[in-house]
View 1 (cartoon, rainbow, N blue to C red):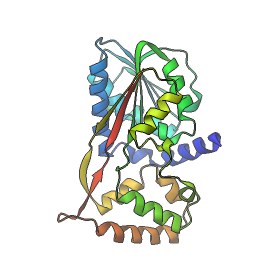
View 2: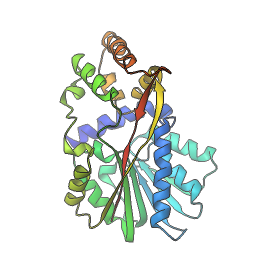
View 3: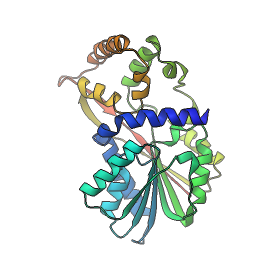
Length: 272
């Protein structure tokens, strides 16, 4: 089951690699990660691992702000990794090494001062095992910093889209459980994950990330994030019908400027 889910995730993100790093809330979130690392790490020449790095939002922000540090960045998607390397080259960043690597099968004995993992653990069926592995790769006094979305993130779009995806027969949407604890949408869920992973110390910080978007921008976002895989399961006719119904439902939530506010509120977790 885990192999199947990892292949599904790889295929979904492979398809959106070219657009993924244009999503604003990922860049805002990356800035928060930089601040947390700087808060917890006093020395400059630290070694950092960024797992499930995507197109590199976190590792690029960190590497540009911490030029004396060295970084390894890993992702399961060749497309995501290629885009991350392209972005690093464009920014003239030479302190990052990129590796094609499945987060559930980490093959390294190297030790790190900080390991980051942005918005990825909730995709994994055995996230506690992955977190436990990450903890084992820390140096003494090292930190794992990971993020997840809060329960109110992406309302009302989430409910509207999932209802429509189920209506039009997406198998993944029909099987998806919005409220299971593994989605890490509540502090108690994160605490449970950390307990299972045998985390000794955990700090959970909630951060608002909000701005307005047009319905067109919302639709673009859905087609360039994790929902892409579910949308790909529909035939062309059902895709267009779903799109029309989604637009109609979202227009009811527009403000005077024709925008629906995006809520990407997140938890930032420091584990050791």
